[in-house]
Amino acid sequence: MKQQKHYIFLQKQILLMMGLSLIPGLVYVVFGWIFNVIFPALIWYGILIVISWYGWKLYQEFASNKMDEVHLARWYKKLTWFMYVIFSSWTVIFILYVGYDEDHLHYIAIFTQLGASVVASALLISDRKLFVPILFLLMLPLTLYFTLIGLWYGYVLALFSMVFLAILLYASSNTNKLLEDNYFQAQHDALTGLFNRRYFTEYMESLNERLLENDKTASICLIDLDHFKMINDSLGHDIGDKLLIDVSKRIELYVKNTHVLARLGGDEFILVSKRLSNKEADVYEGYAFAETLLNVMREPYVIEGHTLHITVSIGVYQLDPRSLFATNFIKEVDIAMYEAKSQGRDGVVVFNKDIEEKVERHLDIEQKLHIALKEHKLKVYYQPQFDLDEILVGCESLLRWHDDDLGVVNPNEFIVIAEKTGLILDIGNYVLKETFKTINSWNKKGKILKSFSINVSIRQLLHEPFVEKVAYLLMTYLPNKEPKQKIYFEITEHVFAEDINKVVAIMNRLKEMGISFSIDDFGTGYSSLSYLKILPIDEVKIDKSFIGDLSESRNNQKMIRAIIGIAKNFDLTIVAEGVETFEQITFLNMIDCDVYQGFYFDKALSKDIFEKKYIL
Image (cartoon, rainbow, N blue to C red; front, side, top):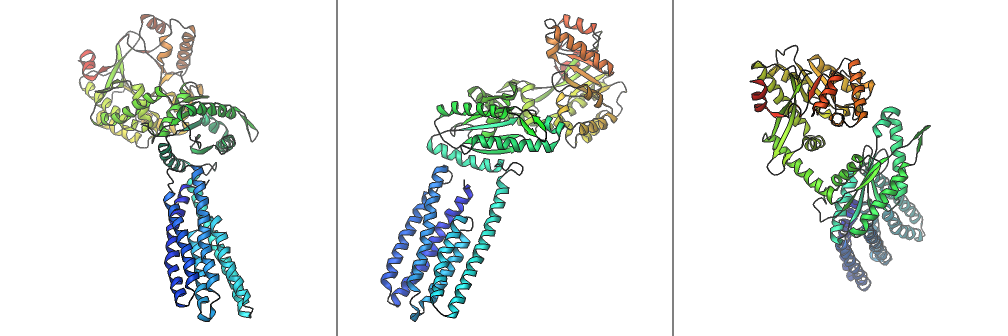
């Protein structure tokens, strides 16, 4: 399939060819009148006008953003014949005038034929299918004419004309190859050879207009490999790259010519159906197509002696140009794909009305979050932590947000959005600064808590200026920090999925400044004993999901016993979060938990209320 820019370029050549034909053609009419060949010249020029009129209609017919592949192919076929015919008309006038050597018109005919050949090689350089046959169409009659002269110089000129034709073909072909190579590199993924994000975005812009014009819809699938990073980490990036190539070939073989397929980057692939259809039918077809593709992808891959079994998560979205999200399609299908991941991966999720409402809220939160941060509507709250004797020993900084329109927005909801948009860096810096100011304020009032816990995202931790930012805050607000007062940076187990050596290096730099580290939600994600040995951790927090079902789940009791046993062996402090009942306290006391946090004691409080209750 030829690309949109190729068609647009050729469309512009129509007007040029009309101008380069009609204006010089008048000269032939004048010469025809002067040298008494006016009747053939007028007939020829009349035909040229008809051809140009057809070219003008062809020019107006073109609308790349509203024509599907079938219509574009049909238009291109018409354009091909137009170019063949209009250049042939110059061969006709050459044959007509070249015989008038007594009036020296043959010189003009020869020069015009050579000029037309140069024009063809220049204007049609983007399309080999056009310039190669047209150059032969123009130059071979000239060569034949020179040969028929029957004198020695005629044979020389014939030879020279063939050399000139070869040069034109060589130069045009090389330039055409260079253009195609550059365009291919700009529009295709270097690893897999599939279309890249740039091309796919441009294609979708034109597709959206065609859908709106025809009141149709198309089905989009976003494919993401599950746990691909584990393959890269365990087998190396070379194996990972070869797997991506095999995956791309398998998808390409499955979709054949029914879809436009692209690699967005990493292990994400996206495809959209070429066939436009009504919305009701395509919803089911899109889901069925994705389900079959899911099974195709599950088949094992054999790469350099490794047999790999992978699963994928697929999001399906029906592109409706009248919807709110018509120009934001990647975000919607991306959300559907992540919905598949949240449901356990290895599945297909269709972007539906419920998810659409979720997206609307997502976009609303994303927009309002920027304003909330700027206008200081995000508030840092503090939840107290107690020891075995229920004595206050510390607190955790927690972010709270109340919006006039959205109401109270759960941190689990807006923090995820902040992570995806990058706003988490500004939010994280805000929380850090506010917490350090609070520590400084309470220390001055004589209430020195043993510990403060601050949540730090992995993006924040790996951000280049983060260590310097912490150093500045320590120097500004805690120049004489109490030796027994610990500041914990809480990181989640997602840190284990990152470059562990880089993470350890950053953590050690912060440890040298006096910062301690805690693993939040321990036991719910990527936990590994080897990480506890590698990472400079001082504390683990038992996830509240284990605490909440203590009385009903013996497995949870066993899990907590195991976690505490492991943590004690590594000399780590254990914090239980989400403590709500006396029975939970009793069990945790029995197995030697160190610190408690939850509604049994108190909820997260604003700074002022916390001070009145625990500081003053």
